[in-house]
Length: 259
Image (cartoon, one colour):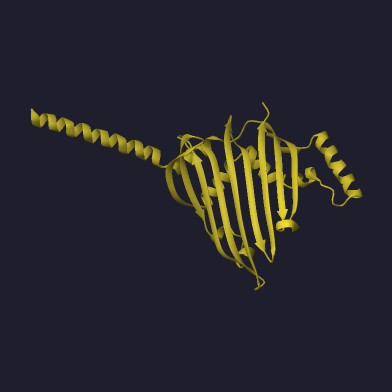
């Protein structure tokens, strides 16, 4: 009887360990879950949104630094006819007012015009449908690790990828000495992206005597609306220095879906 009990306990223990192992395996392959989620979110439905762009730039250092700030709202729409970017009458009027002000004062601030330079087709499309950009990134990058983490106080999985020098165009490689690029993607239990962060930094030398450094960060926050994976907030930072000059740029893009 004792032997039967021991065998029963052993069998139960083996079954419990096996179940735990199977659960672990099911939850462990984050890349497969991520790819599955991206394949589900193919963005076939129509979407309309307002994109708010805020930018700030600082050129130079200390008291000699020149700072410029910008803000603009644009209308985005994506559907069967493709993507459309449009400006309201109010925004067009602001652009005209700023243009007229620059005629009288060349140093006149032009926040609407300044922010308009950061409105481009590629990023606008990516914010309305983030799947393609993410798929390209994970195909190009080398997977490094997966671990349990949290995002906004809720359980999440953090996938880490790295890029090498092959990410750079040939024209830049001859000047870059050191380059690091890391991509982090937070996903939920079914693989849907919650947020991502891309960090890059490099240094090198151009024209023999001119050394330079550059660092950039991109933070994305994702949201699923229907069959679309949207980027509802995108913050880009860039710092560069070289030849006695320094520049700092920050651009925040916020997407408000129109129901």
